[in-house]
Figure: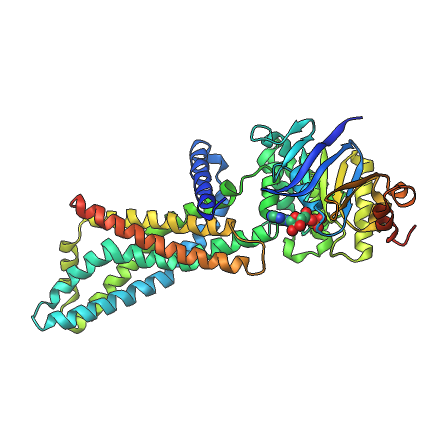
Length: 246
Length: 249
Ligand SMILES: Nc1ncnc2c1ncn2[C@@H]1O[C@H](COP(=O)(O)OP(=O)(O)O)[C@@H](O)[C@H]1O
Ligand SMILES: [Mg+2]
């Protein structure tokens, strides 16, 4: 199996402050992988390391076999896509413009092909009708779908999703889960998501890494069902059973 | 990193990306530049002209009233021309630009930062400095000479009105203006205005990039952009005045 993202003994944090220590796991191609844990345990911090915004404090973190560095940065940026919690769409451009932006900057396609590709991406998240709308004119759930389309524009190896369900009603949130499953089915896309929505994890995730703020470390790794039922870590079983499913 | 170090590192990045734009002009985001230029120059024109007109009117009136006692009030034209072209034109325009555009740059970029849009740019492989700062700084630098010329001409019109009321005919006023000013003085003022524009634009953008992720973040950045812009323009103008004196310009 091909490791798309791999962490070996990584210390995560900011400057001199360690938030999580000695984290190791790897994510395979085509997997839906969730980072799970209470608020403030360091999920977003770890994701910022994985997407190259902050350097890791210690250990080795690779994306597509390469560590983040000034030299690899331009290459690696094209192999990842990120959907931020708010969507982070650029307010001065239409939805289509947002999806076309990475293509305009980095793809060798002609203007017409870029447009066609962006429309195809919007169609794949069910939003071809919103192409001409500005981000301020569409709902929160639609913004996140446009952001997923933008994240996939350059056919990345892995798409990161920061709290996909946050701020959405349960129906919209589960529609987003179905979209993620469908995109994995159709395009073989790998997803790494930060979330604490247990419904969404049981519906989509193949494996989860569970983090505990009190112990400042990763405390369990495995399939969500297994974590809820059989994992030897007490905290993890408690955390996953709060979902009301177990 | 210290606040000063952070500002310097953005400044260094801005210089590097300006050089990279000079080498690859197609990387320049012309659409963003055009929009920022329109907002800074076209939309800012009435304020700058109004400020220039009032300043010319008031200066001419105050000095003419004193000088008339000695029958010297026709010299007001020369005084006003040199004052406006050398100092006041670029300075008041830069103050208006700091209030209108420096603040707008800080607020726009700051709001993008709090919405994670700057992180989104970075993870797409687009440097926020090249993408957002370059077009805005270029727009501010190029808007300044245009605004300055209009402010200066409005100031002279204000002065001409005052003197006309004191029985100095406009023809005499204009010929005094022309004989007092030189192409060099006007060009010096315009060169200063380009520098001030770049400074105000850059300080506004850097304030935006440094926005804290808190509720008052954007407000603090906007204030920093305006105050920082005005103070540094005043300091730069003082330094230039000293240098001009030393070099006898
Ligand atoms: N920019 C930052 N600088 C320093 N510490 C931070 C920063 N952002 C978050 N933290 C701290 O890191 C810890 C983990 O935060 P975060 O990764 O955002 O948690 P989560 O996403 O799991 O809710 C928290 O204690 C938080 O206070
Ligand atoms: Mg978080």
